[in-house]
Every structure is written in C-alpha cells, then in structure tokens.
Length: 327
Length: 312
Image (cartoon, rainbow over all chains, first blue to last red; front, top):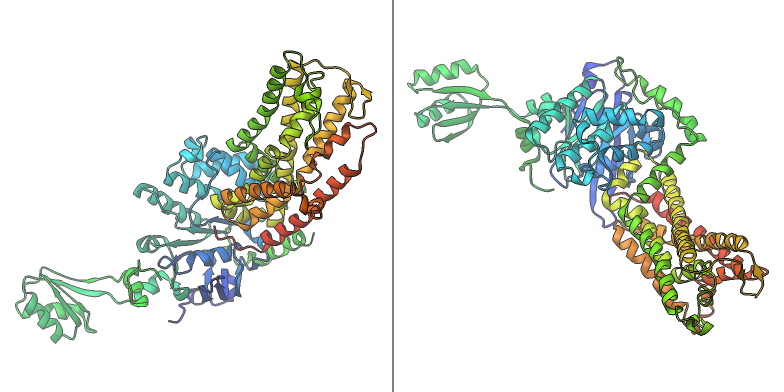
C-alpha cells in the first residue's frame, strides 16, 4: 500500500525528509538466531504529530523503538532521529528525547523521587542545580507529587507507569517515545495520560506512541503506522487510514429478509442478515433513495445509518487478520 | 571533544523542523566538565544504599569480631594461639594478636582476603551491569543518555570504591575490636624489629590499600562477566565461581607454571609490608598482575558493552 503523505499536502514548500522527526530508510534488524525482527522499514514521523505505532505483539515495534533509541544496532539501513543519524549521534539526540520503553524500570529500593534523581544524573545535559525542582515538577505533572517519597517497590503498576512517564518529562523534549504508556492504568489514569499526551503535543512536542489499543490511537493520534511481521504495512494520517476502509450501511428492521432483497436490488454488495440487523457495503447512489426504496417496499425501518469505519476495520482490511494475532 | 563541538550545529539545523512557536526545548545545555562526577556520585549513592551492599559490609565487619573473640577465649588461660606456628598459607599474625590488638587487623585481612572480600567484590561487580540489565534500568540510563563507555567507567570506579570501602570496613572493625579486647602499643615486625604503634597504624593503612588494590583484578573480571549476561544473579554466581576455581587451582602443585598468572596468587604478599625493610618483590608482582587483569578484562568489558544490543 502506498504511503499517505499528509505533510506534503499540507506544507508543499518543505522537503519531507527535513520535516521528519524520525526517518528510517530500509531499517532492518536480524537477530543472531536468524530471526528477522524488522524488515526494510521506511518510517517517517512528521514533526508536531502524535504518531501512533500499531501492530500485534511480536511485529517488531519494540525492536524498532530500540533501534531508534540507539540500544540496538541495525543490521542494515539507517535511522535518523531529530535529523541526526542514530545510534552515532546518541549523545546529541537523546537528551532531547524522552522515552518510555517496554514499561517502566525502577530501582525498587529507592523512592520515586530518588529514581528520578538518578535518571536525571545520567543525562549529561541536565543541570544539577535545577535537578530537584525539575524532578518535583515531573512528579507533579504525572500526579505522583504525594507519593514521591515512597519506595518504588511499593508502587502499583499504574504508579510505576506514571513514574516512568515522569522520567521522560524531566527535561523539555522535542520528541517523546512512549511504548504502551497506558499499560496497567485504570480508566481514569488512561484518560489522564491521554490528556497529558495531548497537552504535550499542543506544546509542539512530537509524540511517538506505540499501542495495541486501537481506540487509544484513534483518540489521540494524528498519524499512524501499522506493522505486521516486521514490515511496515501502511503509514499516514489517521483519518486517511480509516477512510481507506469503507463504512457499512446498517439497517435495523423486523423485516430483515425483505430489506436484504431491496438492498441488493439497490446495488448494495456483501449483504449480511443478522437477526433484525442487515448490514451491507453501501451502494454508490444517494442513501436517502435507498431508504426511500426500503420504505416503498413496505419494509418497517427502525434504524438506518452508516457505521463509520474504525481503525480496527482498517487494520483488519490491511492485515487480513485479527489484531491480537501474534506475527 | 569533537562530539561536544558537533552538538551545537545540528540543533540549529533541525530547528527549522520544529513548530515555530516552541521555545526550542532541549537546546541542550552543554554538559559541565564535572558531569561524570555527578553520575559517579549517583552510582555510589545507589550502590551503597542497596541492602545487599550493606549486608556484605556487615558480614565483613563481623569477621574481625569473631576472630577477636575466638582469640580472646583461646588465650584467656594464658596459652598462645595455635602453638605460634601458623605453618600453612596464612602469615603467622594470629599468634601475635593477644600481645597487640593491631595484629588483629592483619589477621582479619588474612582471613577475609582469600574468600570473603573477593566474594563481596564479585557480587557487586557481577551485578554492576547485569543487575541494571535484568531490572531494565540499564536501558533508561543509556537513553538518558549516560553513554556506554562512561557508564562502564563509572561502574568500574564504583566497584573499586567498594573494594576500598570493604577493606576499610574490615580494618576499622579489627582496629576497634583489637583495641577493645587486647593491649595495644609498640609492635614487633615479622623481621623481629620493633616499631611504634603510630608506625604500625601507618603500615596497617598501607596494607589496607594494598589489599584493596589486590581486588582490582577480580573487580575487572566481574565487570566483564557482568557485560556478558542479562542476569545479575548469573553474573554474581559466575564471578564467585571463578574465584573459587582459581583459589583451588592455586593449591594444585602441578599447575605451578600457571599459578603466577592467577589473580589471587600474590594476594597474601601484603604481609611483606610488615617486614623490616619492606620486601617489595611480591607486592610489586601482585600490583602488576592486578593492573594486567584490569587492563585485559576492562578492555574486554568495554569491547563487549559498547557493541552489545540492549534487549532487556
């Protein structure tokens, strides 16, 4: 499937490669066992986007993120983050990138605050004079201000996740890489994290968000890429991706059989009857006429409407498989 | 350095890509020259706040107490300890303890150096990288970014600091117990000459430094093992296992051609500091051997760690 480039349409004056916060070319990782984890990835994350990175477990998302962060050396291909080659320019790139990779990792015997102090001390660009204030601000931002003095091993999974996020927010960042940031959070926590992501994005931070929750991607992301079995299947604006899969016409009626006949007559394809629900691929003509035809055929219509295609439909259409199937 | 020079330019170059309204976050402050010390300080704090570290130091502090009490009980009827011989490998310090508490320092070091001290070092060194790896904290340190070479150097410096701390814990505990249970005063060296208590204290300090330096080799070995595995426990067990193996091989007479290359071979040469004049040959051999181990296994650890895929 062709890449859907929104950036070119929106800002034709800009070279796309310059505009990209993350740009990979033919990025490939083959592990020592011979297993191909990532295969020729050409990923472009436009600046200022909230970029959803989707794919079933084992599809190579985390390996990609690790290569982007300089933790894993690619077998071939190149990756540029903030315009600089990785992993060569790690020292220049990574201080401007906040990352949550495969869940939080903490020193259980240290308090939440001391964990952040330690991570901040590992950043060469972090000013030790402002360290305490920045740590306090980060704790406050993720709602851990009151629990900052507690030992991290006493934290719940959700609190650990928040602390991991706080570590990514110790400094102002150009790019945030968040791998499953709402994992382990309760619905309220999920909402908070999503609004935090939106807030950060509105400040101009590019957010690269990997998730297996499609509705999460749909809610917060402007762009998305889908991976399966190490390959990039598609990338582009979320609206375009969802539009790629067409919505379905749904008619609710006690006269389902008759309705199905009329719909076929009206040119609808793939008509499926399920109890009092009839769904079909909408015909090309005006749907008002389709409805009129149903009524004219004395079909008692309870409901008539178009069900918008979700990203999940798009995903299934693209991969031909359910989302949770491991690659 | 070239890396620091490169920094300013690309930031400016990519600035065009940033949304214009943003007050350019992370226009990275150039790291201060002392930044590595900040990382070292954090590393030291983290290491010495672990319960495991404190427990190891506690065990080491207990050894002189046990030895002191044992000697006190043994000599309470006025008889000398062990018939004054001490024939085997250990220096004959123990027989002197009841005469002078300062000898408890040497006795305690001789008792802990073959196993307790290096085991403690092996645990801390083996855990250094592998422990962070198995906890997952390694990836966050590296994306902070601590820098692989710098992190490794910081880890090694911390393990060396722990060598020194562990030795000093034994020395201080032995000094205190020795002064409490036994008379102190002028003492007689192995060569039979008499030195003042103050000079004896100086020698004790020198011995502590020599003993700490003797552990530099196994520290480097442990760090190397630590870069090989993602499991802290496996790294600790391997390092301590290697220690025991080498200690056993060092006792097998048929291997005497190899034994001068075992990191533990000259460990007990610290006793030569108590000769008058100090007999330097074995001491120098020991320090040279430790430097060799540090260089070889330090380089191996560096080569491994800087090219390793961090998948944990």
